[in-house]
Length: 141
Image 1 (tube, rainbow, N blue to C red):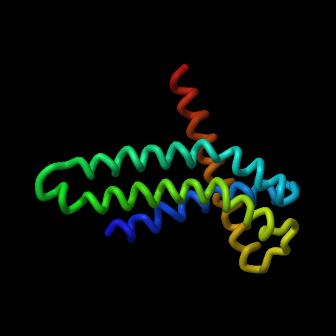
Image 2 (cartoon, rainbow, N blue to C red):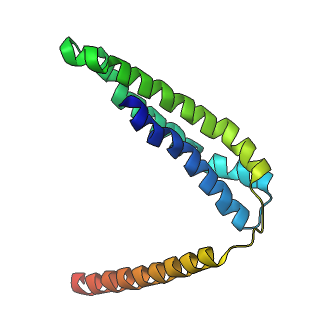
Image 3 (cartoon, rainbow, N blue to C red):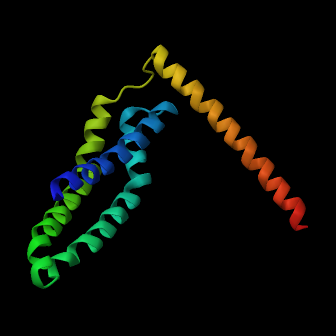
């Protein structure tokens, strides 16, 4: 059970770092600079998420009785795997990203279609929220 849950938590940190690095590459930075800046921006969030997860799961190992005996391995394994995930996400992932991610990658037709759809969705959402805030502002004053 712990391993299944850990898979999602372990991969999450690296995804956050890679996504932010790719965002910097799309803005025109070199992969090395994007790896540095991208990791710096989300580093605290990765560490904070790891700390929260460890603080939630590790105390389970101190429970007494049958529940403590059943879930001690679960909590320790999950806490240790999340800690290692954070270390890998902040050290190895930026190094690999600076070598593997490329700038100015040509997007395929499917990616362009999805991007266009998300742009329309974002513009529609912005229009609705702006209208709602304006309407709420008129009623407050």
